[in-house]
Length: 88
Image 1 (tube, rainbow, N blue to C red):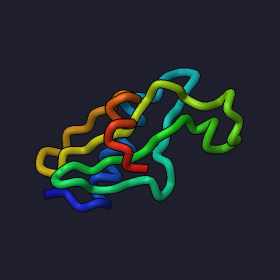
Image 2 (tube, rainbow, N blue to C red):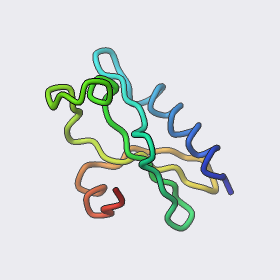
Image 3 (cartoon, helix red, strand yellow):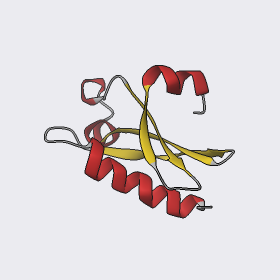
């Protein structure tokens, strides 16, 4: 089973390699992370928005990053699925 530090590193790597793209880089939101059962959840947002706070820089329609504690598998949840979890 992963610990929070290991899960955080995997989530950051996932955002860098699989989610970020030319024109929009993503990062984890500081302090917005939790573990529910065997799954770690992280809030994320565009780097531009995290730096500026300007709503025009906000990524819309994205949700949390989840990391399976047993396998390390990462995936991006949709906005609806994340809203239903209501973790942050």
